[in-house]
Image 1 (spheres, rainbow, N blue to C red):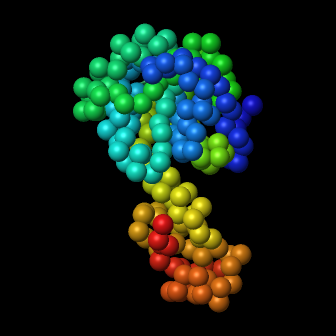
Image 2: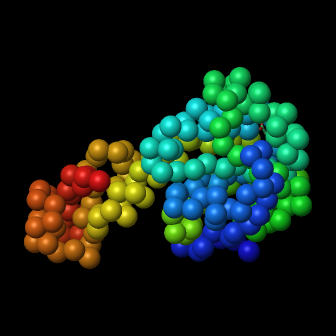
Length: 210
Ligand code: BEZ
């Protein structure tokens, strides 16, 4: 079954490079980026995990923990870790799940046999501190993901959770945001100060302070 936005992220217990974890306990109180890759010792995956390791301080600033999964065994993940460090420039600093039984990959619908075989495709789940799924992405095996975009979406989710606003096309942190259609312009001015009304339904305001 596929997972929809707003669903509770399925909980599981699994072996990882950092020992056995129970997902909801492991991420308790934090956001999580949970992502699958097709296989260890493959080039695109090595660049992706290397980048995730190098971005760990950016994730930590946002209270985000990262965790990867593939169907390879834990000894394989541990053997690959050195290459991830060499390629990304930072030692592997987050866990990789060994999902040999495919129980986790199946719970998250990460195996798409039309993509070649029964390894996982490049899925991403952004999960909030209440364990709700807030974003899903699915990339083919041949295309590496953009982890700057993953950070950007987390920033957007955290801003839109903090105030009745939405983020427009191509939004970047610090750009103006859109006042929620549910809020009157008078109420928006009382709450945010500056509000520019372009259309009755499109009102801009500076990004609220965290
Ligand atoms: C890669 O990581 O390079 C890769 C893995 C599986 C299929 C295609 C590419």
